[in-house]
Structure formats: structure tokens, C-alpha cells
View 1 (cartoon, rainbow, N blue to C red):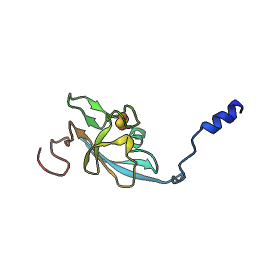
View 2: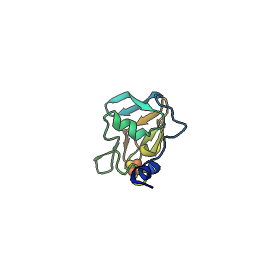
View 3: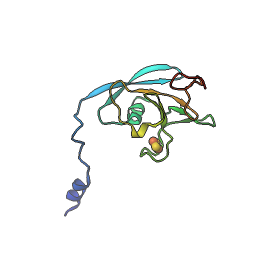
View 4: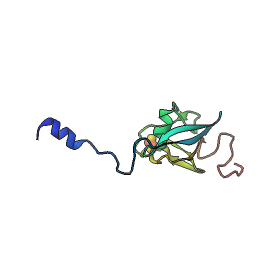
Length: 121
Ligand code: FES
């Protein structure tokens, strides 16, 4: 097999369930408010956030801001609150229309110190 054929054989094909042009928005809320983030079917929440210019979506216990690091589900640096569930990995969650993504502080709190379900911390 020549080099070009070998390279083409190693190139992954597109997912058959993803159609081009299928766009929608997810909702991202941080300390400054909520906004709609464009997303495409088949991409991760982290990919949509990065494409929209967001570089962080969590405050770590030491006060530093965190976002994508490994991108493959190993490091857990990308965790945030997705559809009310704290510690959801943005790089492992597929974007879907209307998905709610919220900034996470520490072990799973909202920026105001409250719990995602509306309870007190
Ligand atoms: S970026 Fe490492 S688990 Fe998501």
C-alpha cells in the first residue's frame, strides 16, 4: 500500500448519524449571565464552548479557572454543571438543543454558592 492510500485508510470516517448543517444552541451561564452558544450535532459541549471563545467554565478549589485540558475524558478538568448535574465532563457530553451548561465552583456549587438543584450550600 502506498503512503497516500495508507493515510486515507487511517482517516476516520464521519459519524453516519451526524448530518452536516444541523445547528442549534446550548445555554451557557457563568458569573456574568446566560447566553446562547451555537453548537453542531455530534460535537461535544467543550468543543462548542471553545468555538464560542469560552476558555474556562469552572473555578477550582484553589480559585483558578479551568476548562478543557485532555479532551478525552481522563483529567476531569472540564467538569461543569450540565442539565443540573455537577461534575459533568464537557468533553464527554454531546451537545444537544437547549442543553443547560452552568459554571461550576469547587466540588459542584453554582457561582453564588448555591447547589444546582436550588438548595442552600
Ligand atoms: S478535558 Fe480532560 S476529562 Fe474533559
